[in-house]
Length: 317
Image (cartoon, rainbow, N blue to C red; front, top):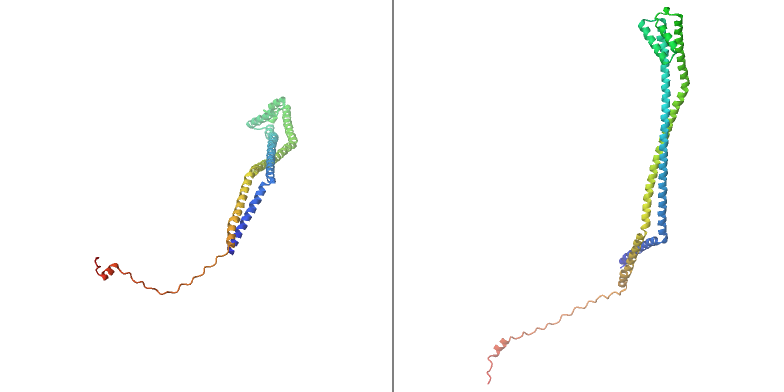
């Protein structure tokens, strides 16, 4: 009996705990504040999604601006590189022409002036005249120098022709000096243009880094937007599911209440009645009867035997 009481008490305690839990859930879900709380959560999620979308728009605009800045930086680099390349080409040309004049003055001119074999003298004169034409020497000087240069022997030249040699050399020296001066003037400008190229390269690198950071920010804001979209979906489902959850909680509370009621009204009542009922007296064993004398019954006579013993019956009179 005691073990049964303990078992029933445990069952009752479990049923009461279950009822308490389901009632608390029911009160939580049916409270006015729960609906307001869920609606507020949905509004908050909507606001966060709107902010995330705005952030995506801002980051995309920033990315577009960085792309434009990179394009502009590349254009500046291209112009600077073209300008520097042109200046370098001009410098190289002046250096080449100066060296060509200097070389011709040291070899062809000197060989022609001191006299040389006809073949060499002819080649040297042709080289010098080609340079004179290229650098636009005075035509009269060129014509006079041509006549003087055709005289292979210095002794055959007139004083005027000797003067033409000197005048031609002066013209070549002046042209060489012009190249020297041009190179000296152009050197700082070339250095500036070269520096401008390096600065433009640095600007391009900075623009590329800025664009990469902007692209990363776009990906970051897009991920946040995706997360906020998911959050709004969950908040919406959470807000709209309150009625279904409340119904389930009420049904669960009703079932727990019925289970506890049935337990108390049926099982506990029966148990209490059984417990309160007086126990029936134990049956008393009756004594066994004493053995009595057994009478022997006389055997019943057989009618035929009796008839034979009586003999034949007398005939009636």
